[in-house]
Image 1 (tube, rainbow, N blue to C red):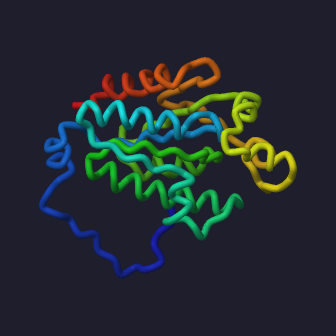
Image 2 (cartoon, one colour):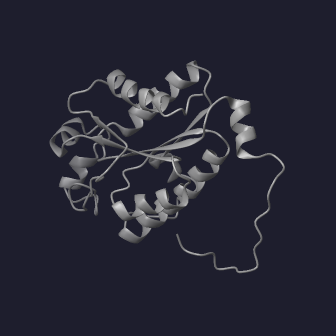
Image 3 (cartoon, one colour):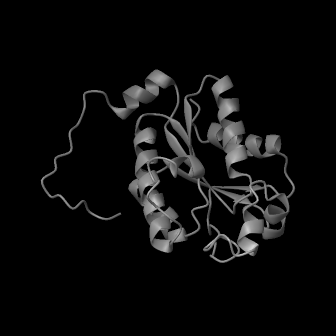
Length: 202
């Protein structure tokens, strides 16, 4: 991540440590970074997983691509440069939530490995869990829940990932969820079980 433009900055420490917050919540903060093509099931899995964990008394929060682009990142488009800045900003937000002891589900296409790796680098060891929501282009295009692939094929959406812009699959993700053949419940079970075994759920 780039250094701030201003050099007259001092980091202010509080009197409540991250471990204090995590002990209060009875869980460990983590960012689960769901990446995959549009229509692969990232948001659907995030929403379902959040509900399962909330029902178990866990504090969670979803950072969703479409939602973030309506506020924090509403000045960014889909050029490679804007995509990188989009992920940089959300990575910093996810880091803050994670430091707060929250289990964060970050649902972004995030097509470039370098951008995802840059977020991992600003996180402490174990704070960043890359979850590849794997679905073929044919599967995603067949779903086309938002009608985006149809518009992309018609040339109405430039730089659309999987059609006119690249997607770089994760090389060593912590979790792989294959939504070509798994139900939502099965996918959520895989993710929640990973968090349980990793000690994130207390």
